[in-house]
Amino acid sequence: MCPVQSFPTIVVDGSDLDDMGQKELSAQLERLAGRVTALEKKLNSLAKNAPKGKWGIDRWIAFGILAFTIIGLPIIVTSIVEPHLHSDLKADVKIEVADQLKEPLRQIGEIAGDVREIKGKLEVLDPLIREVISKKLRGANLSPKELKDVV
Image (cartoon, rainbow, N blue to C red; front, side):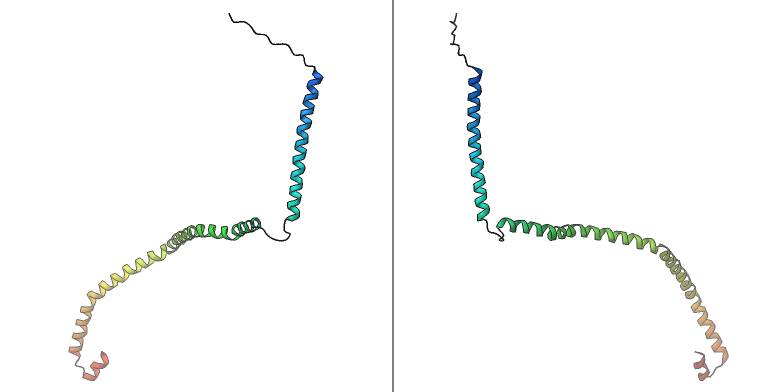
C-alpha cells in the first residue's frame, strides 16, 4: 500500500482574496491607462506633424482607384458588352428584314416565272414572225426606198 500524503491546511480569509484581486486589477488598469495615454500622444504628434493640404501616396492611390472606377470600368464593361449587343442587333435586323421581304420576294419569283414563259413564247414566235414578214416583203414588190421605210 501507498502511504497517503497530506498537505497542511491553509486558511485564507475572503477579504484577503478581494484585496489581492483588486490590487492586481488596479495595477493592470494603470498599465492600460498608461498605454492609451502613450498612443494618444503619438497620434496627436502625428496629426500635428502631418503636412496640411499636401497629398500623400495613399490619397493618390485612392484618387487613381476612384478615377479608374468612374472612367475605366464603364469603358471596359462597354467594350465587353457592346460586341454582344451588336451581334444581337444584327440578328434581330436580319430576322426583321427577312420577314419584311417575304411577300416582295414571292412576287419577284412569280414575275420571273412569267418572264421565262414570255421568253419561251417569243422564241417560238420569232422565227414565225420573220418568215411572215419575209413572205410579205417578197410578194409586195416594194422599191428599195419603200423597203427601207418598212424596215
